[in-house]
Length: 73
Image (cartoon, rainbow, N blue to C red; front, side, top):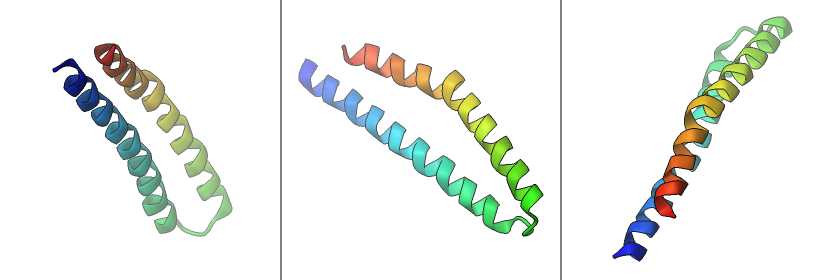
């Protein structure tokens, strides 16, 4: 029973990590391609998006993944 539970948590962790990666990259390209072709606007968007993406990942996603890892062990 423990082995099945560990595998389920590992599967959840894997899909969470892949889903987050696809979500942030997909949203980035969707918004980036709709911006006007001014270099300054695109540069500001890239810097702002990276800033918030790192903030969300560090403060929300990484602790969640660590908690799942603790539940596995």
